[in-house]
Image 1 (tube, helix red, strand yellow):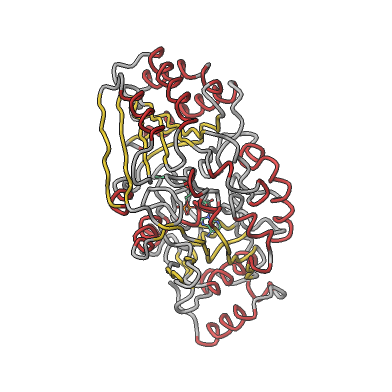
Image 2: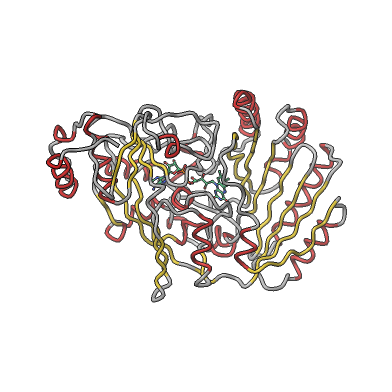
Length: 475
Ligand SMILES: Cc1cc2nc3c(=O)[nH]c(=O)nc-3n(C[C@H](O)[C@H](O)[C@H](O)COP(=O)(O)OP(=O)(O)OC[C@H]3O[C@@H](n4cnc5c(N)ncnc54)[C@H](O)[C@@H]3O)c2cc1C
């Protein structure tokens, strides 16, 4: 942190409060006199002690180094940081939970707006709404709301940021019953690319865009409000493992799972997780008792499994926390492996994919297919959110984990090969929250028909493309 004279600090504060960016020359600070507002904003340079910690994201593969980090603790702090970036022609990236697969919350030589310390929770008993700031992480959100016996339908990994998750859509165990995370979003506050603080209560288009179409693109979300839902009393899960796999066996197991899933109750979620030596099928249920259709599915899946883990029934929060995952940064290359309607969509490519997974020297590789459908498809109007993929029944994710940075090139090459085969097999729709920097037609893949509408908003909110990453909305 560099220090300011009292006069400079006062000028900074007054200008920040006035906000319009009329006299940009005023804002052309030298890096030696960066604007700092006590309790609202401070800057870090690569030589500062806290820089490494504030730059750190979950994916150790990403080595991007911002020229400056603006640690923002308030709306005003974010506005001031944006004005500084505009005056100094610094591209801006935004970090909340830091879990972006491709590290789009960082950049090289630009300004990073770090929101990870901007966090607060408020549950209003009157209308059962939940208001939070972008630094909040899912683990804390579940724990906070559970004391009121409420939840928002989010993902399960504790370290994922509620902001990034919601702004790209957000699915998880409760989505088939309650919709995507973004479907529960009722209001946002956002600082646009010109430093203006906007409220979606005066701008319905803004709320629409923040439901799946605003990951580090249109503006910086500083507050999110959600409607909440009652927690179930219990959370139950079942696990089936299959070993001694061959390509034919994998195909047969996939075909059966896909054929059973249309009867999966909407209180349930399932994932089909294929590794080089083992297939794991997970089913979760938020219903108090297993329904007859679920029991039929469980019987079918158990017939030839190597291991069956029967009902593990937990009190709600304990049950969720079993899936909280690790929070220590790791090396990985994970990407969307596309949306599917049925087994037919991946039937042709699955055997060769499995053989490549077996042959790869990077043994921790997985193809995970998750159920969608239910309320995601049927509960909300298509034009209620920028998220465009409601009608798909399944979402795939390809994951490669490794221990040494020297394996990065191998991991990236392997994943690129897999993605090319999926593309050749006709899989073209992808999840924006599982970005793949190698995808060529990403605007269509992530946003489909919502893209032109998002571009129109980008032109209004950030005409100079200040807020950007390799796959941000272009004006
Ligand atoms: C271990 C793990 C588990 C996951 N599980 C799930 C899951 O169950 N369900 C699911 O749907 N997804 C899941 N994801 C994907 C996750 O939704 C995305 O990675 C999400 O974007 C992460 O948000 P973040 O705030 O943690 O990340 P960040 O890296 O901070 O941000 C992600 C993106 O959002 C932008 N962004 C962040 N904050 C703001 C803001 N305040 N205003 C504007 N733009 C912003 C960033 O610029 C970046 O482009 C998982 C990812 C990981 C790594």
